Length: 316
Image (cartoon, rainbow, N blue to C red):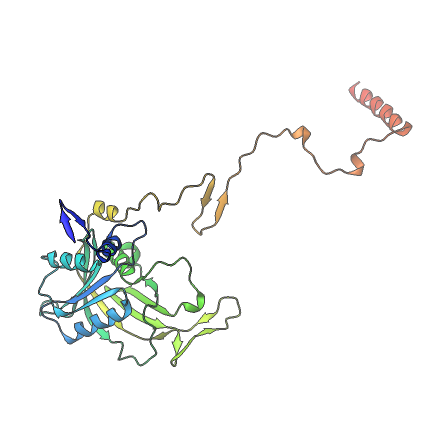
């Protein structure tokens, strides 16, 4: 590739395809994650990184060599690897006496660190420790967050957003009920975050445990497949409100066009408003009844005379 005045010009078709894939798009590619370990790690951290890589595949890159860096002090190396692999998410594992079994989840915006959250592993069960059938590679998980802290505490709110970005996988227009096989459950309770992984597969068979429930929606039974973590929240590096708002900005072409006189409530019910001209109620067509018809002939004339006489008497 040839670079001239800050503009990279490809020389081959392969280089042109590479640059087109990296170019900004209205609908961006699936977010890739780079998973790396620091200069000093433990067996727990190393195995935890491998298990999370297994959940994230194929949208992840696992670095096996050690990277001597400290993300909270200097993030230049993370930004370099982000440009190299076109990754906007990262997971960094380290271990020391002050912060044992440490994991740092983070994301980048425009190849610069947006926010980072440090979690410490207090208890861990690996994928191999739980002897159940596993989900196939690339299965899109369902994410469940439980706990009041995810709704009220600012750090937990940002952690929820970060974990959703990290594990959600590709964006799909629709989901098949029988294809929902993997569940990631996060619980915030008493200052800790519990992560559990469940599957609907049983005994190595590919069918899902969708049992009869007496209604259209089946009853689902889940089995834990691992990995499972007990985290404790440590340091945080959060982006400012202005930068966070800029990172979430969408292009105008992707924003849904607002339709007039149409609104939705909190449950997603669609309401429409109709504008009508002023009606003349005298010309309003009502239901015809036999008792209200005008009578014809001498009987009708006689009734008319008696009614006029009674009206005069009442007036007098």
